[in-house]
Amino acid sequence: MTAITIDTLQDAPHPNGSGAEKRVLLLKPRGFCAGVVRAIDIVRIALETFGAPIYVRKEIVHNRFVVNELAEKGAIFVDDIHQVPEGARVIYSAHGVSPAVRQQSKDRKLKVIDATCPLVTKVHVEAVKFARDGYSLILIGHRDHDEIEGTLGEAPDVTQVVSSVEEVRSLQVPDPEHVAYLTQTTLSLDESRDIIHALKEKFPKIVGPHSQDICYATENRQVAVKNVAHSADLVLVVGSNNSSNSNRLVEVSRNLGTRGHLIDNAQAIDPAWLEGVSSVAVTAGASAPEILVEGVISYLRNNGFGAVDEVEVMPENVRFGLPPEIVQAIQSAPQSGSAPAAR
Ligand code: SF4
Image 1 (cartoon, rainbow, N blue to C red):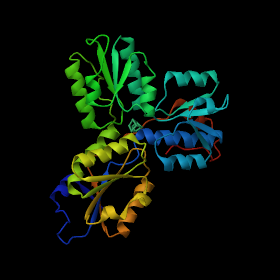
Image 2: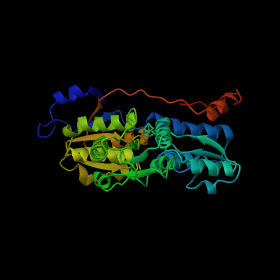
Image 3: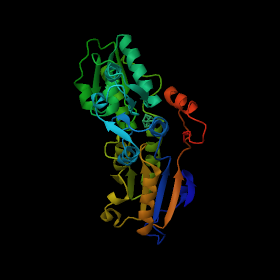
Image 4: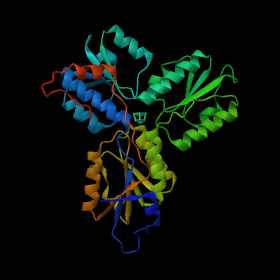
């Protein structure tokens, strides 16, 4: 595998028709973000420190492979807090929870470990603040996503969810002079820009967050696809179908006119997709592990794509600290060499 930059890629000729080797363009950054690494570390360390079973509310991150691997180690995934036995230990997923869920945990005397991504927590804090200041809140996002369920729960009486420009047109608020908006962290940059634009037209005095809510990992992976999609005949995105940021990567590619498919792993590749294709771009959503990307690369190598160029579009170096419950658990673990270590 060779490492190239976006400038080198732009200078290189497309292999199609040139007799050159068929190639894979492996996008960087791709795959795990800091919030996902942190959430998975939390479950692993909790299992090693406290022993199985450990309950996890909802999928810790939206990836089947990750969830199955943790379930094999003793994590029990539940949809509802009421499925957790009283007094047991429960971990909240990276997507966050509503205050109602926190109260249910309290009522059941659960020992809570919170794996909510700090960037999701930031949106919750903003929601609370806007609601406290008397704003009607417009939350841009997908209603059925766990993150929106949690954020909406911070101020359900004053919050409305919108997911398209059309929905903005039919919005009604008590005071159009006092409206604020927030967004889900894993949206399409282009789509949310259009929705925010429509909101600003409808409510000229609308206010928003100090810095955008779409997180760095979602943005960087979309920007990487935007930069490379035109050099490829096909874009493969490794990720599960309930992963919001992975779905957005496929949309970005399709919107640029390059075919894109979301695949859980190499087994999901339809050989017909590769017919007449000389250049495939491969990326992965923020919850997809690198081992699945490696499987896709070796499938492509075995099917005539001999050259693999890793195209670094931008550096990414974000890490989040562990929550205090886990730090404390690590500190009080016996020093026998069996103490868990964060990756
Ligand atoms: S995708 Fe963004 S918001 Fe979601 S866990 Fe990763 S860093 Fe956090």
